[in-house]
Structures are given as C-alpha cells and as structure tokens.
Figure 1 (cartoon, rainbow, N blue to C red):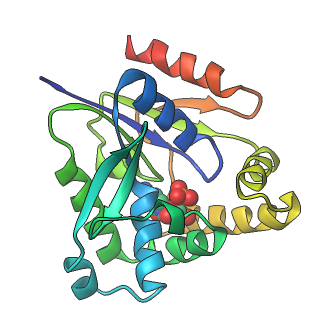
Figure 2: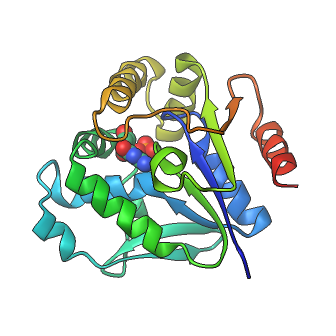
Length: 206
Ligand code: DC
C-alpha cells in the first residue's frame, strides 16, 4: 500500500479539525492532530516542559468511535485539552524549538503506509512539505470567534480577543510561524458550510 498524506494548515477556528474528522470518518484517513500534542504537553507541564520530561512520555494515537484521540501513558487526553487556557499555554510552549522538534519527530514517526490527514499550524509547511495534497484554511476573525464560542459555550467577544492574541503568537513565532505552505490550496471557509469545504477538498483528491 502506498502512502498518501493530506495536510491541513490554518489559524484557530478556520475549520481544520472539522475537515480532518470528516476525512477520517468518510474516507478512512488516519487522523493526526498536531495541536493535540502541543495541548497535551501544555496540560501536563503547563508552560514548563523540558527535553527530559518530554523524553519520558509514551504517546500513541487510538481510534475512539470514528475519531482519533491522543493517548499519553494509555490515558485519553481528549477530555482535558480543549479549553482556551490549555490552548493559550500551548501557544506559549509551541515557541520552544525543542518542543517543536519533539512534536515533529513524533508525527513523522507515526506516519507509515496508508492514508493520513495531518492537521496543524505547520503540517504542510514544515512537517510534511512533501505531502501530495496541501490545504490552507482561512476565515474571518469574527466567524472564527463565533465557531469557537459555540464549541466552548462561551461569549463570542471574550473569545475574539483571545483568538486575536493567539493568531499574533502563531504568526510572529520565530520557529515555524503560521504561513501558507508552498503549493497549498487556499480555501476561505467564512461563508462555506462544512459540507461545501469537504466536497471541494475531495475533488482535489481525485
Ligand atoms: O490547533 P490548536 O488550537 O489545537 O493548537 C493549539 C496551539 O498549539 C496553537 O495556538 C499553536 C500550537 N500549534 C503549533 O504551534 N503548531 C501546530 N502544528 C499545532 C498547534
């Protein structure tokens, strides 16, 4: 069996996870969410990870119903890592080159033969620049804040400035800032339904 890699890059709330989950569920892609790694590291060590602490982690991806979750020492991290506070710490530790190296090596090592969708801020630009299909999703800030607010059941205005702050950190980061990967298909999801985005991406796979 050959290896097919689809990468999805883009800012917070642009629709990366939704698209990746649809590909995993309907097209049987193995789904790797790189943000879950940064979030898990932030959850476990707050803003104080060290190379020693990271080297002791035992990490795996497991299918839970139709989704893929990150497990650390056989514990499903999903219930603990989705809040905005963990997201904020994740964007702080994501600046550390040894953390990025750890995540990138972990992700590259997880990809063998088969179909993979790899989602993150630098999936197509840094981790897999050789991916066959690279997608970059973007959407207006207000729309992204609205989506996150719905997801987290919080006020839109409260989340808007946090997303803006996170965008700033992701874009200005020295190591692997958020960029449109070379050769990526850019899709603006602001006025598109999940289904419309999915159909557009599927047409790129044919
Ligand atoms: O996509 P997310 O919201 O789950 O990501 C959380 C944080 O992790 C994000 O603010 C920046 C960091 N991150 C990163 O720097 N590179 C990635 N490939 C994925 C996430």
